[in-house]
Image (tube, rainbow over all chains, first blue to last red; front, side):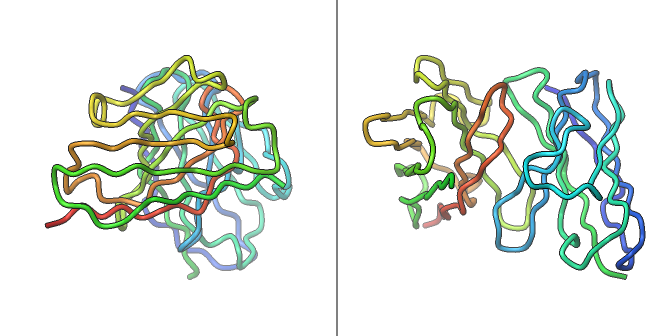
Amino acid sequence: EIVLTQSPATLSLSPGERATLSCRASQSVSSYLAWYQQKPGQAPRLLIYDASNRATGIPARFSGSGSGTDFTLTISSLEPGDFAVYYCQQRSNWPPVTFGQGTRLEIK
Amino acid sequence: EMQLLESGGGLVQPGGSLRLSCAASGFTFSSYAMSWVRQAPGKGLEWVSAISHSGDSTYYPDSVKGRFTISRDSSKNTLYLQMNSLRAEDTAVYYCATDPGGLLLDHWGQGTLVTVSS
């Protein structure tokens, strides 16, 4: 089973700042890495797939990069609605599909 | 607009059974693989099952294998999750999600809460 480790666990930033979230895989997942956003009381929403492709309707301020074992989600300029929990997910080697433990992005 | 609506959650005793449903609308259900993902209270996401678009192939993690069964009825545009031998650690919100291919979960329902407790 591939283990995904996200860092930091919590990130405290202000609106307008740049956010950089990390996801590291225990073995290579090629580019089969996705990012999801989850707000309180809501279902997760797909943001990025295959490491760097934005899902339909996702603003350009969200970008993903990386391959192999190290991946980054960047939010270029935080808006109030971006404060949420972010999960990475690998679909390179399944079953099982695995998720990271999440990074909580909170308002500073 | 793609819509997924889960139902069937509730309170069940340890060792009991429950069947969840996920009603799909706004897209060609039979063209999509589907998955169930759960989230224990205050915890992260855990994938619990997947089914191919035809229903011929199903997949499970070890944590639920032999206890949970995923199925689909394309005539009713509905996905199911039969859960048997439930344990306290199965307590979670259960989400269904569409999969255009290779376990990419691109649309999610709002979830249904399952509580396993005596």
